[in-house]
Figure 1 (cartoon, one colour):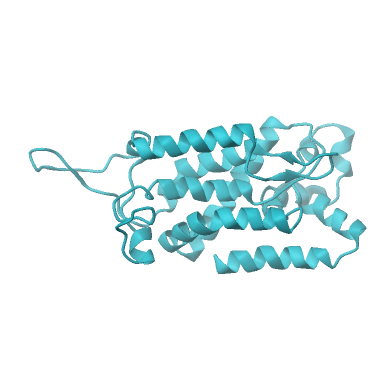
Figure 2 (cartoon, rainbow, N blue to C red; figure 1 turned 90 degrees about the vertical axis):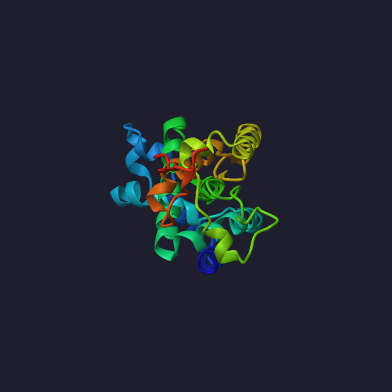
Length: 239
């Protein structure tokens, strides 16, 4: 998490030193522009060429509109991302960050196919971290439990399977509030180039759904073993 915060702040700090025209070029080159994939003549006029059609699915997540935008995203990332980072380890954490950011870009592309304004912000990846965290956060002894031990132990409690998660009242309550808030207002990903800043809430949902569904592919902690009333051990349910 410290490395991620330094990277995000460092990129924003370097951009602050650039002339406005150069910074705008950076945004157009590394921000995610749905119209870049349009078959029209405009598609070939965006900076970055063919390479940008690939790297912008991820690089947009490292750009932010201003200090408020980056601070908002990182404040949301800290509690959930820290728990996921402790659980996954460095390599899995950054891979998971990338996958959820890419999923958010795909969701934005599907819902904004002809949008010219570039999308920037780490909100889709933040949403993915939140989704991953709720797979184990409501388990006894986890970081949302008042009886938790140290942070390392709290981050490594056995997770529920996806099906059991979706039957858990606490998880369902979190999902209802989270989706409701995003549909109404979003969490802060910003599209640059319009007269007003817009919320890319579809990208948030794309990152969240990817984090929820793909959690088990990254999770190194063995799943919880359930027991029935006859004390027979039952295997954990598969996702």
